[in-house]
Amino acid sequence: MTEVLLVGTSHKTAPIAVRERVALAEGRVQEFVGELAAHPAVREAVVLSTCNRTELYLVAGDPVEAETVALGALAREAGLRPTALIGGIYSERNCDAARHLYRVASGLESMVVGEAEVQGQVKRAYEAALAARTTGPLTNQLFRAALATGKRVRTETAIGAGGASVASVAVDAARAALGELSKRRVCIIGAGETAELTARALTERGVATMFVANRRRDRAIALARRFGGETIAFDQLPGELERADIVVASTASPHAIVGAEELALVMAARDGRPLLLLDLAVPRDIDPECGLLPGVTLVDIDGLQAQVRRNHLERQAEARRAEGIVEEEIHAFAGWLGTLEVMPTVTALRAQADELVAGVLAENEGRWEALGERDRARVEAMLRATVNRLLHEPTRRLRALEGDRRHASLQLLRDLFGLEDAPAAGERPSAEVRELRPR
Image (tube, rainbow, N blue to C red; front, side):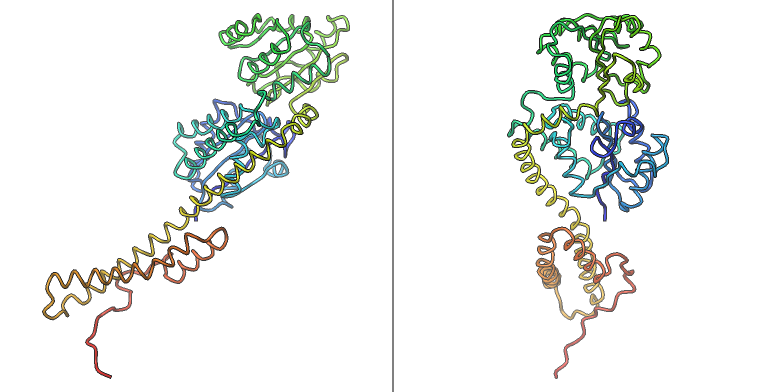
């Protein structure tokens, strides 16, 4: 039977040092999902890669083999042995895999519960797989339903109230560390979605001047204009680091942008003024060694956990309501998945029945006496009606079964009727209609 398989790692199972090794840059996702789908064990594939998770959603006939393929692909991407990743990897199948994706799209699995950005990330992951032509009936249904579930959760609950995000939590952490932020000088390295969210959160707290340094200068200029800031060229970053009180890094660079040696020179020119570094990127933009320099406080995305826990406590009631919605939607998906599992067996069974009816009619074609065309049609209709009535109740009961009972019953049915390896027509027993003899 075809199964849905999830293989992934996230902030709940692996530290950032592992997550950044398997994180996929936006331009790499489509290529990576194509490589997965090219393997014979994988029929459909979608890859979701964010700062807090890398997850592979696969459809496979042999989920054990597909899981091995997925783990190997992640290990190659990370440049590690598969055994080095196993401790941080989780694997789910079918409805459990779907439930996890629904929770992700609803913000229930985010580090900041209820963050809205993750739904856009799920959508982009699905669109990348569509562009790579690696989706199919199962992944199409799964991701469309997950996105609809996420939308329903945000419509019917207040789980996303206040626009909480990793960026807003980082700004809260800065305020907790430094107090009033309105007089602080902030440098934002990056001009992507996280940079925009950070700029918005800072603006709401009265920070009027922000310097956005990024290789995408046009995007940086647009952000600076929107939030009342200024821009600098990327090569001017060292000078800005000397003046800044807070540095927020959130680029998509595969390598560290701020190194410990360079920052040591910057700190020597700051006359002892402390510097707060908030690294929101995965892979990390700031060398972890920077946090060891005197006067430097470095907080990476895993270091925001204390602030995140307070946020989670405030959203527990809404999270419970969201979980109820997820379970309702999973029940609908389970019904659809069950129908999908049953249909090949039912189709094969009915095809076998049609073949038997046709065989009986063919074997007795020369034995009818004075049978007109109308009577012949009636005999055929009666045979087919008998078969349909015989199969109706087993079919209805199969569709009503759930979980393991359905799977076991389907396998038994296929074994009993020889549906896995049906014999050729010539090998079937004769179904000749013989003359009835008196007792």
